[in-house]
Amino acid sequence: MQSTIRHIEDFVSKAGDLAETKAELWKLRTVAKVSATISSLFSVIAIAVLTCVAMIIISFGIAYWIGSEIGNVSYGFFIVGGFYAFAGLLVYLFRKQWIKKPVSNLVINKIL
Image (cartoon, rainbow, N blue to C red; front, side, top):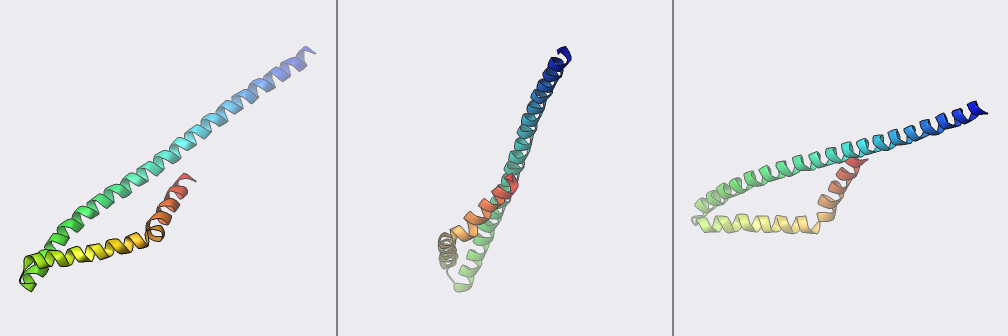
């Protein structure tokens, strides 16, 4: 009788240890996935910022060049501004297809 009780106590103790280990493993996996997702998002944000800065500088150059060719520098800036307004309208109209779905899929893939 005494050995049966001891076996049950050992079983319960090992089951408790297993539950604690599984909970700790789940926490570590969650932390790893969250940190991978956040680091991926930060790298995408850094690349986007650098691309925006480069596009601004290139846009000034193109606007000045178009304006010099036309004979009035301000017209070049209006043309480039109109191009970006049109591009912004397209991005707004197709934002779900071009931005929302890919970003959602990226985050879901990183988490899962």
